[in-house]
Length: 354
Image 1 (tube, rainbow, N blue to C red):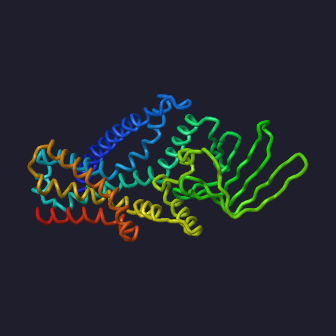
Image 2: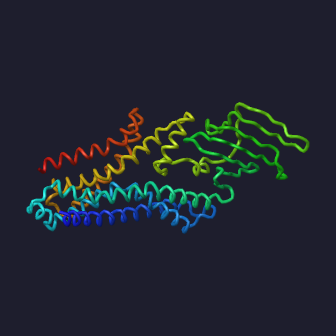
């Protein structure tokens, strides 16, 4: 049985990794094409775009993992079926459950690879890619450091601690210079909110600097006149898909403590928790196709069905989570229901196949 498990596992590992590599290369190519409109902005050129796209590869591999495993397992088990090797295995007494168990046991290696990429590699390479792109496009107008984001807007130098959600800033400091580059005012505020495309600072102070004195004025609300575009702030915006699990949980608690909406981060958190289950479900679904309705079809048809089913699963996961939040369902249900639905389909097909 160990030799059989190794043979089945080696086959699906090989086809799954080849599928992952192919999907990642296609996604990198599309990412590079997306960047073409930005070539020429600042110092951003083709080589920067290529480096940016390649650095996003771990993120793409992680995103496509369940879909690639489904296609890879259908291909792998399909190869065994087309050589009648599955029939021989069953003829010598191996049950369908034992063959699927062999595939699932080696699927643990793929699950471990997905966890490693999602937790330790993709967050770092994605952050480095965004830093590279923003620095090339915005140059001296944009500087991100451990102390926050620095921006230059005419005679204003701005430092921001953090972007909360889509319309709120935390920790805003504005250094206003005069035409002689002399510092004339420092404005500090705990937060700023985007209202009707204009930033409103709240609970802050103006430090008015003259040659003779520094005068302090408090304010509850102040309209910030700036030409800074929202895209400049995207580098500080925390995309929940780019966190590892521990950071995601910490950030959810932080937003919750500050009274911010955590739904998007809750959904991303539960998706990461359930990702290993999704991978196992895809292996089970692939087996249900091979032992069920696709037992005697051509390899091309199997791959085609695998691609279509994988795409359906990918877009179901992407769409179901946000829709479930709109209807007030808990985030964990929005993440859990798609793999449960596909697991139900796999169970039905296997039961029907006997």
